Length: 159
Length: 273
Image (cartoon, rainbow over all chains, first blue to last red):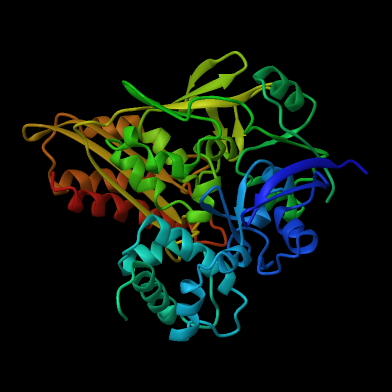
């Protein structure tokens, strides 16, 4: 079996490992790195359940190969929580923006990228920032509320 | 699905891998969807991202290189005055798609619904083809749905767009929802006024023919005229009569023909000519 050596930063720690050339970043992160927050939904870049952060931008891990992670700074929900940035998942939980929860990791990852770029997004900014993530339970109203609440907590405003 | 992977660093190597049957990708937002669906079964995929180029250059024209993503263009200072282009790009896919997908890849895909492809037609774009670096106008480069003028060893290196400085512009994409939509029909209009007459007019439609549609003779009918509603009504009717859309899962041909007419009138009424 042909393998390719890659070395990349996963949630702040350098990892060096061999990957098969055809393996998707999604399968590699879930199965080999045990980052099970990375969900497989549609597998074609529509639903956003597999969203991860690569070099500061949110991308679909289902449309990316594991070998492409070489040299990159990669973050999943696990790392966001471990590094103490819990205000987004907490805001989602507190306002009731989680129902079945399958889409939630992807939403939180996209929310982090949105808030890192824009600490005070209006409703349109939030819709635009999260347009690549689909939720089939909530109807989005609570999610939008959660992002506004997370933004307030990130800025340190009293809520 | 198993395949091999290479990421060559030179134009020559990339060209050789393509000639040997490798499938090129940069963002993978089209290729990996096609592989997943079983529409393509490559034995080798060729990652183009190790080819070093500038991202964007803007002098007289805006030049976007291979591997430059939609987000790169949207964040670029120098693309600011290409406001029609930015309006089109912000509607592409979703943040995740814009962060990986590339304008050059959109040309390579040559879908009549290609959003960036529409912008290359309205901006009189030119494609730069490697390894020879020959330049070819976009309207000659695209031959039909998914068909482009490339030989086995060639690939798209960059695309140049001419400025629409001084033009009033309009863009609209009609689809079932906002995000992640493949258009039912789309329109881009650019009109330059001199006093109260039209000095130049460009009208491009997406998803209503085998490729992006521009009819030069109909555009010329507007030039030198005052922008009267009756004039636009008659031209809009001519576009509607002349386009040959297909019926597909997204909409019927008849519906698209009606959209062609209505979208031009909507553009006219919104442009305050």
